[in-house]
Every structure is written in structure tokens, then in C-alpha cells.
Length: 371
Ligand SMILES: Cc1ncc(COP(=O)(O)O)c(C=O)c1O
Image 1 (cartoon, helix red, strand yellow):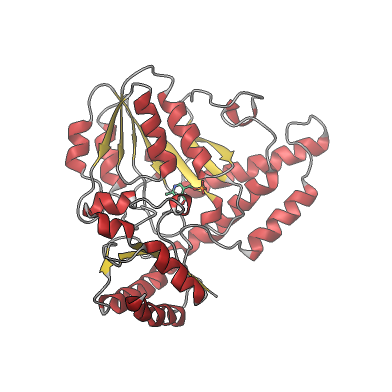
Image 2: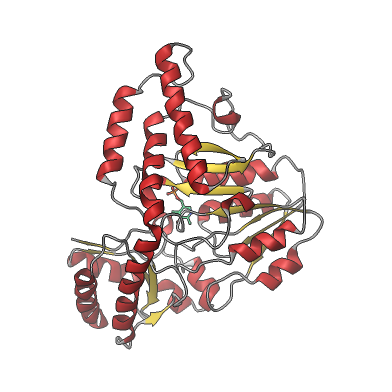
């Protein structure tokens, strides 16, 4: 089996799984219970939260564990925007649906929404962002690494632009960047940050939202006061500890993994460039973990199933929208070409991928010409 869909999800790391099992066994008590067992669970939960904040360098943020990044994006964006009845909010045309669809919904509610274009290299148009910022701007949301083409957004420059407007807050969906590429910005300069566990070898069912301590988020869920009232309900201490363990293990390995995967990426791109029926959508300067290409005239889904017959697993786009036969939104924003946007394939890599696996993929892709 050749798995090339690490952007959709990763297999769980054995050490992280061991952490999950150990903590779930030993710290099963409800962390809000007053008795000693409850207090032990609470200490474990607080330790996980503090360690993650330390790893990210965000001592002045609150951290809320969520079920996934979708929930974190929803809670963060709605939370920051809805407390203001109106205003301008800005995002890009290539955000993950869990950001993009929230902005579309806020547009229906009457907010003044700007969807920024992206340039030919897949990065956000910063001039457009500067022009779009006005005194009514409440929130800007720009992802760090795009999940479809892997473009790395210029977050450092985005921070500078947003900072000039003290009322505006910045949200960064860091899901595809964290533990994969080194940031050129400080997380402490970002007001709201989203993470997802299952994209970094932690179990499914855990993500996180970090938000600056001074911020008060409008509630979307009502219940207890657990997790600042932002995500009330009983906390899974084991999932919190697992996310912490994954970050503790993989953040220090980021540079080494990035270097190794960059070599794989170059090898794959070289091989793909030899196939004249393939057009690369991912740029050379993007995240090495994502290689997106189109096979104009073919249906992306047909190609996915052809590769599947050879036990090769790739994706047509983001896993969440792959069942809809629509042009891929990011590829359309990038190329303005429906043919390319309906025939795109995403190959995503990991430090677990080998050169031999890529050679096998390239061998089978040579047969796709006649599919
Ligand atoms: C950039 C980005 N944001 C958010 C998500 C949603 O993540 P989750 O599956 O944890 O909700 C994904 C998943 O593909 C993603 O790639």
C-alpha cells in the first residue's frame, strides 16, 4: 500500500498512541470534579495546555482543545466577529471550507466580506490586502500553508499589515504548517491560531484554538465554564495529552523532516515534469509536503480510482469536499481554468514516504495517459 494522502490525515504515531492509552487509563476522572482524582486530571490537562503554549511561544494566549480544526476555525472566527454587529472581515479565496464557508455565512448575515485573490504562485495578494484594510476591519484570516497546492502564505507580512490597524485581529489556520515547515513569523504575533491533531500523527478527535488572553470570544456553545466557556463540556485529558505529545515529538524534528521531504518533492516534480499530459499546479516555493497537478481532459476522480487499483492512495482535493464533483476552488482561483480544476490530483508526502514509493507512483502515473 502506498499512502500519499498525509494532508488529509496521518496515521497515529505509536508513542502518541501509548500516551493516549496511558493517560486515558490513569486520568479518567472528570477534570472538573472536586475530588483528588478530578484534580489530578485537571493538572494533567493544564500541563498539556501550558506545554503546548510553551512549545509555540504563546504564553499570552489561552488554549482551548477542540474536536478538530473545523471546530477551532468556527469557534475562533465566529467568536471574534459576532460580538461586533457589523464590520469588514477579510480572508482569501483559497481557505479551507471550515474558514471559507464561515466567511460566506457571515456575508449572508450582513458583514462586509472581502475574499482576496491569489497570485500565480498561490500566495495571497498583499497589495489587495493593504487596500482592503479599513477602520471597520474586525478580522483577517489567512491560512499558513494551503491544503490543496501547498502554497506558503506570507504570514510575516500579513502580521505587519494587520498590526497597523489596532482594532483588526488576525486568525491563522496553521494546520498544514505546524510541525512540517519552519515558520518565519512568531505565533505570539497572531491573535487566533488553529491546530489539528490528526494532521500531525495525533489521534482524530483533537484540535486546538489559541486566542490572545485579552480577547473575549462570543460564545457559540452554551454549557459549563470549562475551557473559558468557549468549548464547554467534559474534556478528554488523554486527547489533550496526545496533541501535546505529538507537538513535543514533531516540532523539534520540523527542520530535518522539511529537508528530507524537500528532496522527495524535487524527485517527484522531476518525474512529473517528464509526463507531458500533466501540468503542475504547486509551485516550487511551496510546502514540500504537497504536490498538486492536473491532467487536463481527465476526471480527477477517475484517476484517483485508477491509482487505487494499484494500491496507491492520493486525493483530488481536500478530503472534505472530494465527494462533490465540482471544480476544485483553490485550483480555479489559481488557474481560472475549469479543465485544470476538475482534473487535479493532490499527492501529499511525509517523513515516512520513501524515494522508492515515489518511483512506484511515477511508474503507475505513466499508465494514466491511456485511462
Ligand atoms: C488547512 C486546513 N484547515 C482545516 C482543516 C480541517 O481539519 P479537521 O479535519 O481537523 O477539521 C484542514 C483539513 O484538511 C486543513 O487542511
